[in-house]
Image (cartoon, rainbow, N blue to C red; front, side, top):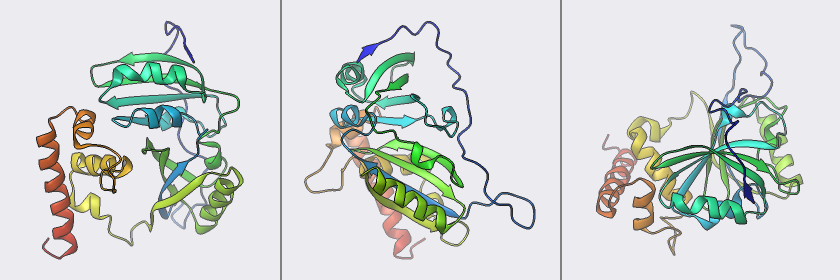
Length: 246
C-alpha cells in the first residue's frame, strides 16, 4: 500500500477511548468491575500481515484516537527492532489502504493508517458496550485488547461479536477488579511486566520459540545477554511470589 504525504497530519490524535458510560453505583460513580485481556487473530484482521512479517517489532494502537466508532483510520506506534522494514511491510499489507508517517525516532515510529475496505476491523466489537478500552498491543499473530467491563453480560456480548466475525480469540486475563490480586502489578516493575508480556505475546516461552532471544533484545534495544538476565530476574520474582517467598 502506498505511503501518503504527511505534511497535513497532526501529531495529536483526536477523540476519547471509551464507549458509552456504564451504570453508576450508589455513590454516583461509573463502575467497571471486570478486568479482561482478549487476544484476537484472523488473517485479514487489520495490520496482521505486518505484525506477522516483523516478529521483532511491537505495535500498539493509540486508544486515545478511537472515539467509539467504526473508523477507517488508526494511529499505530511501531517500536523495537527492525523499524526499517515497517514501511515495506505496510506496502505489502492487504489490510492497509494507505499509511502516513506522523513521527519517526530511532526506536519508535507513529503511523496514521487507513484500513482497507475489505479488512476486518479491530475495534467495532467494543463499540456501544459498557467497556473502557485501556490498551491495545500486538501479539505474534494478531492483537491483545485490555479492557474493563461493567458486567458479565458485556463479556457475553463481546464473545458473540467475536464469533460473528469469525475471529479466533481467547481471554488471557479475566478477573474481577478489587477481588483478585494482580500479581504482575504487585511483584514486577513496569519494565519487567512489559518484557514478559512481549515475550509471551511473541511466543518466546513456546516450543519451538516464536521469537529468538536476539530478536527480543532488538525489540528493547539491549544486548541478548541483558535480555537473558532481565528474563531470569522477572520470572524468578513470579516463581518466588507463587511459592510464597514474597
